[in-house]
Length: 134
Image (cartoon, rainbow, N blue to C red; front, side, top):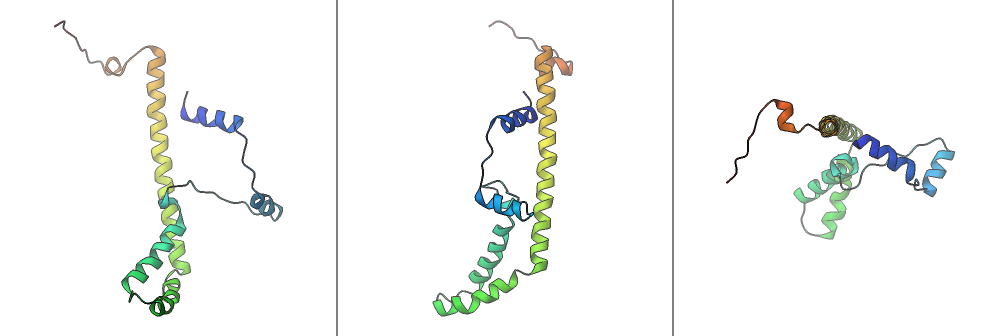
């Protein structure tokens, strides 16, 4: 079974989770995009937080007064252009993942076809291998 077929089967059989937030957003014509967990490279907010944390670490004096003074400066570093650049990088990473996924699907598809036809990887390349009894 190919990955796309398995995904389609899971989509058909698994009940979709329902969230109150989704219902409210849908009523107002808004669709919510959810990104996969544990992939910070696909989470723009993670990079925004990194900008803040780096600024705070570079300008830390280890006092609460210093923290309160520098925190607005750190938030000011996350500008509209910064966010656009971060989101652009996320889109680029997403495209790389899609391209890699398509390549893997092709490889799995070729292997599945070879297994179905009764060929192994060595025969399809035309190489001959012999095993000698010891």
